Length: 218
Image (cartoon, rainbow, N blue to C red; front, side, top):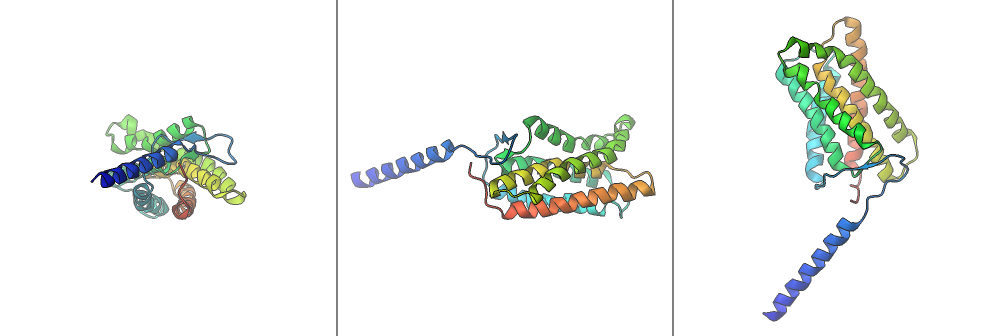
């Protein structure tokens, strides 16, 4: 009996020591000027599955937005919610981002903002949907810069993953605003729809790449 108890005690001490070593290891970001650490720590499997489930909804909607009639409020709200959740999932899936923390907060707020004109019945709020083309263009522009840095540069895996997660955080607000967008002319439908479609293709490629990458060591 004493031998069994001592064995269990030794095993518990080893496990506790291993946990202390794991939690004490600092996160490392290579090749970055501005990095932030995410306070959310969770196993990578559930967020990855959630990301792979929500991403096709958001990107598929943006790809087809030019060719389908104006969707209902429920559909638009579901897409905007999914885009906002995807921003949170990116923060959960990486320990470092190549951006100041204030930008990550602004990206989450921008991805959630389309819910106001989508769900509100107040005419003042619904008119905010006119901001959508500019929000889509701004999100696509800043995300394209980070995508270019990630795919055209020579990075180690951890630095590349941080750049791709950063680009995704910056891209999802634009796709969220695509749900609130109400085209007012044929030219706007073509131009804004093309920007949203290109942004969706980049998001699909980046999501596929980070999904197969080795998770970072926290």
